[in-house]
Image (cartoon, rainbow over all chains, first blue to last red):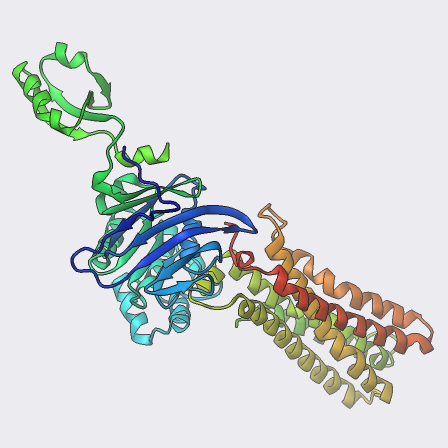
Length: 302
Length: 217
């Protein structure tokens, strides 16, 4: 797999694509953390194209710390962050971005609607904005209920509503679909995909299939440093393994490793797939399905 | 700014019960009201003001502060709002308890000498706000310094003792000490607590960095 260092220089840059809306994040040699302990070390990257940037990394790699620092929640120990032309070291970047934490952040004793009104006031949004996000996230039945009465999925839905109160152009979403059922997770992904047409989305997830589905770029962190930053499509797995569901020619299939319903075969790359399939068909194997078994992003966690 | 109305109600209820006890029960039949009532009021005020600390701790744990910081709210404002809630609740309880106590004492003809009003001015008022502020400040710093180990990251369990401990000790000391020492004990204690509150407030800006407002979850 090709790795591109993100630090300290030259900073990896995603060039502006067609339809860029002018939103820009430039992170230079950034170090940040908690109580003096550095979690992020010399992180540098530049984002200029509206798209979904999947932020990947094992637990403790620094994903949440990066989001918190970009959002101005944590101060930078060194380096700088430039968001839409404004350089920040601390004090919040609320004017430029929307932030979704992995914690719900709803105050005790508030109904969903009261909490949304509260956050609307803080953000400078209006009453019609609250009504709009209630409709957008289908919160009509929950608006009068206390947050403590909601299920995990309902809480997440109410929490996500907050980021749609005001358009900001840059969205930092820390595991937005965790604890959601597949249907709602799909709806949230569709909303985020809609935003990504003109906005910059940094999207952290442990779900690699989700990341592969929606991400255009990958920003992978390892031990607080940028391990890879670039197009998801440029990632290549260390091993290229295909799985086939097939019947017939038992002797030939028996020679392959089986994983669940799939017979596995390691190949040099996708270019070998047609040849491999032709050989199997010529030997009487009836192929019902073929798929890539490795997700190149998995290698970023090792 | 939000305040814990439940704690406010508890503080007011306790103050009403104890005022009634001083006025209507026991052999004293109101004789203890004037010397004791000003000394008891700070205890009610501290108990009732715990709601401010509760709200701060809850908002921090639930990640509310994380969002507010992201929207550009300054950490100092979050800390200050916690203190304002505390002072507001102390004030409401003091005002209510005084109104009820005096309202009950007046029709019963309980004498209210000049020393009663003096004690209210130089002990009850400063001690109530000072003890409530110390409780709240220590609690907020404690909450943000402590690790997420179960039971240690909630200061609410010990917070009432921080504030009520000195006020109860002073109540006992003032009632058992010679009359001549009454003013030294009460005046000295309220001055000491105000100084402590100011010192803690001055230190708080150094101790409460941005990461202190984030949930441990």
